[in-house]
Length: 151
Image (cartoon, rainbow, N blue to C red):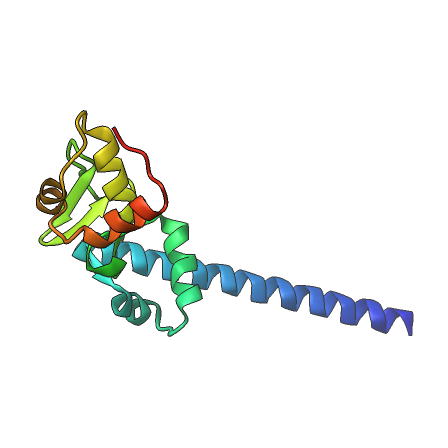
């Protein structure tokens, strides 16, 4: 009887090992597909990522993105993604792919705050809108309500 338990135990250990290897291999393949897609197209939407991975799970997509390193656009409500290594940021920490903007600072609100803080005399609403190429009224209002302190 004990011999059977050992054999079953070995069988299941080997099975679990094979399944784990298969999952790891699938993970590497998915990561490679994402990396190749983003290198080729530079900027993609979430639906492109779902398609590339063959899933509808946001959790799976973001797990894979985290593995390869990514950035989210601060324009277009953050619906665009690129590899973290691709953007060539300008002196203000911004990179545009067409009209899609990415920032070292992250979101539009974070980018707005950093742009105001880093300018010696701050920035006007008009200057920010021109620089960031988007409407900045709402993030500025949120920052004021949060008690942001600027130069």
